[in-house]
Image (cartoon, rainbow, N blue to C red; front, side):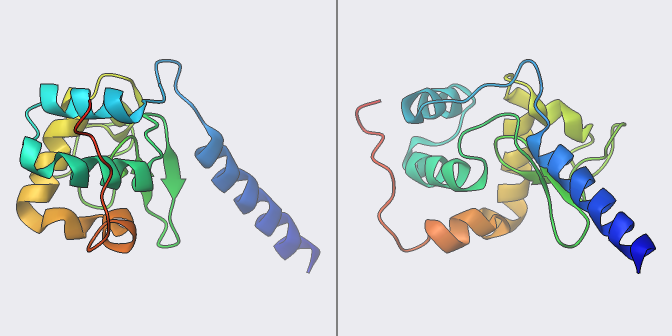
Length: 145
C-alpha cells in the first residue's frame, strides 16, 4: 500500500508541476488586448466574441496555461491546443506540425494558425470551454475594443 501512495503523490506532483509551469515569455491578456490580437491575426470580426469567450474559458487569457487532462493528454496555451492530435511535445508534429511548447509564449501567430485549423475541421465544438460556457449564452462585449 505504501508503494501505491508514493506513486499517487508522485503523479499528483507531476500534474501540479505541469499546471503551474510557466514560460518566461508568457503573458496574461486583457479582454481588449485579446480581441485586438485576434483581429491582427485575421480572426473574423463576426466571430470575435465567440473566440474571446472560448479563450477566456479555456485558458483565462493566459498564453502559458498547461493542463493535464484525465485521458493523459495535455493542452497548451491560449487556445488550449491538445497534444493528442494537433501538436507533439518536444518536437514538431501533429496535424498543425508544431511543438506543443511553442504555444506557451506571447507570440500567438502559430497558436492562431493551429486554432483556425481546428476550427475549420470541427468548429467551436472542438473546445469544451466554448461548448459549456459560450454556446447559446451571452458573449463578451468587445465592441469598444
